[in-house]
Amino acid sequence: MPQHLRNRRWFRYLSHFCRVVFALAFIVSGFFKAIDPWGTILSVKNYLIAYDIALPEWVVVIFSIWLCGAELMMGCMLLFKVRIRMVSIFSVLSMTFFTILTLLSATVVPVEDCGCFGELWKLTPWKSFAKNLVLLPMALCFWYRYRPDRVFAFSKLEFFLMSLFFAASMSVGIYSYFHLPPIDMLPYKVGVNIAEEMEAARANDRSEQVVLVYRNRRTGRLREFSLDDKAWHNSDRWEWVDTRVNSNASGVEPMILEFYISNGQGDKTQDILSIPGKLYMLCAMDPASITDNIKNRFDAVERHAANNGGTVIYLTPNHILDTTLPIYNIDAKTMKTMLRANFGLVELENGVIAAKYNYRDIPY
Image (cartoon, rainbow, N blue to C red; front, side, top):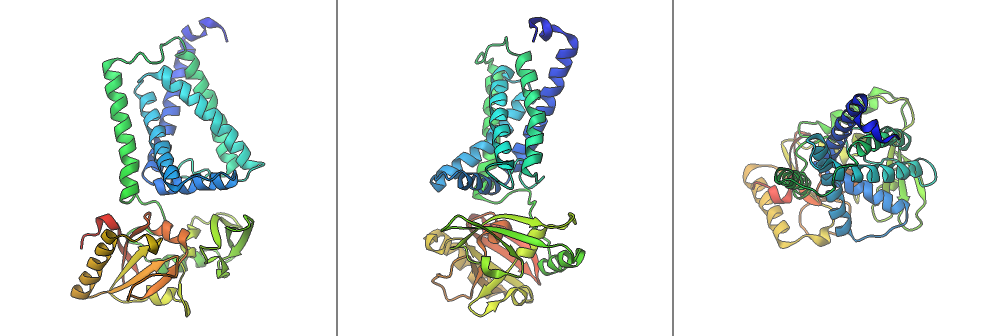
């Protein structure tokens, strides 16, 4: 590319356009991932499993929160022209990496959902790859435009803005991880009548077939289940990979159809959803990890229900739980879809989701 090209007016306009579009794409993608770091954690785990990489849980959590925040921060720095030279280098490197990664996901190492835009917009691997093929040349364009600039020559204002963007971006992810996403984009939002939504999803198009793809934790093999086949409802043996609808998209989120509650006597979904008045569902992903603080919060819910009228049950993917309250089992993936927390509370009122809390925020 000729050296004098950077001085051409049309190229300056083009690089400006590419920078703004790229920045907005990163801001939207980073924000909707940052408000739901649990979703990013699940996506990162899917990639690690696909590439047979084992990392400690805390490493995955920290990396996922950093990844969301870094993307949001980079978008803000590009939009406000803060050290574009430095950010453009990271933009080119990151887009090169993710272009290769999504190509592999679409071909030799299948990963169904890249999680590029969180729950806002689900992309197939090929669509993710196509999106990256558009963004990568944009990154190269503004990288070349600002190549003569110094990489680390921060002015005081730039340093202040970078620090502000970093703190704000990381705070969004950290807050959402330790509490709940401030914007709920999943099927189990407050105000949803679960039974009615399930019935609407079934009635929308009877010809649709919802297929659940699970991986055997022991052998690593993938297996497809229908919604009527509840063999997948064993989190010790099966790990969720993907949910697919084998027909034209209907616009109804199929994840709502995965809601299934059972106990030793079998399917109790309708019984639970038909309980009149207030139902307090104490959710425990791993009962063995319940601390005294969590137990005290759950005990407070039990006392509140006793004083104000209401039913309290435990929901857990595991079968072992030391409590006198009724215990029901739910798939781990469904629980994490309903409540983005390992421990928390979901309140139903006549089958309608009235409130959801991370255990830290339980008001009772």
